[in-house]
Structures are given as C-alpha cells and as structure tokens.
Image (cartoon, rainbow, N blue to C red; front, top):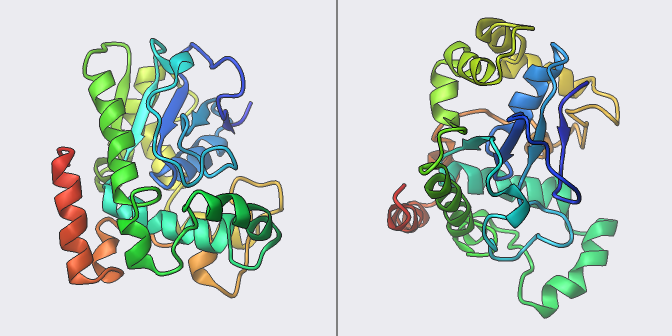
Length: 247
C-alpha cells in the first residue's frame, strides 16, 4: 500500500500510522519519501483542510473521532506554514478565475471569508493565516502532551537532520522496509522537484502550471523563508500572534 489521505469522512486507522498535520507543514515530503519504499501510512488535516467544508473557517478543535488514537503529529513554524498556504490557496486550490473559485466565491463572500490575494493580508487573516495555524498546532501539542502513545515531529528539526527525523518515525512504527538515511536521500528537494516536473495527474506530486514556480507543490523547502516574502510590519505582527500561542 502507498501513503494516502484521510479527510475524517470515516473511521480513522488505529495502528499509529496516522499522521496529523496542518496543510503545508511537510506532509507532501513525508508522503513522497514513504511512497519510494511502499511504506503504508495515512495523513489527515483533522478538520483544517482546504476542502469546501473547512476552508476559510476557524479551527473547530480536535475531532472527536481522532481523540484517543495513537498517531504522529507533524508541525512547522506557523509563519512559514501560512506563507506556503498563501501559494497553495491562491495558485492551486482556489486560483482566482478558476472553476472552483467561481463555485466557492459566493459562499465565501457571504461569510466574509474570501482569501486575500496579497500575501501580507493573507497571513494576517485569522481565517487563513498565522492565527489559524497556531490554534491548530497548539490544540494538538497540548493534547499530545498528555499522551505516551504518540509522536510529535517538528519540520524544522527533520530538515536539519532528515535521516534522524525519518528514523524516529520508522522506529515509532516498527518499520524496517527502509532506514532513515535511505528515506532522506530518496526525498531530497531536488529529487522531489524533478519528480513534480515529470509527474502524472494522479501522482503524489500532481503537476500544475509549470511556467509559474510559485504554483508548484514543491516550492522551496526553506526554513525561515517567510523573511524573504513578508514585510517587516507583518513579520512583527505574526511573531506577536505566534508568541501568544507559545511559538
């Protein structure tokens, strides 16, 4: 079996191979790495996806069906996450002028939840930006603090030492189909970018508008990249929000 998504539409798996993450927190990297060795896992955004029911809404909290399950929680700096979400929403999920944009326009407009098309406004919007990311991550980290059957992985730590990070995940699962070093080598940013450029429509790295590098699933993979994207005032505001949640 290969890695797959579970959008909480049915019973969740109970064997610990469930990964919870906010969108754009590194899940594509994990999915791609595991797929190279056919390692089975399921990923869910646990109520914070960009699907029609959840996009542009405050995070409602940990879903009841996910409570008590052994799982892995993957999280990332909330400012970097929000910046990546801007490109995901505006270039992939809800690009202005697309069919989905026109279908979603009126419902989002009526509840004051149209996504901003300017990056600084987007990351400061509580329905899309840093505040929502922080709310999600804080809820899950507080939940996991009381648990001994779960694993929390920080994206920045995994990027600093991919082999060690992947090995922690494999050890948690008792998985021996690959080593952490093998997963790290197979899922470098360069390899993922090359895979996306040649990917089929049903691949994990589904291709998009190749002429627009900001619309690619694999953009930069850079820790702290928000410093190159946001204004100084926005960075200060976002750091204030993050600090309020303990990040």
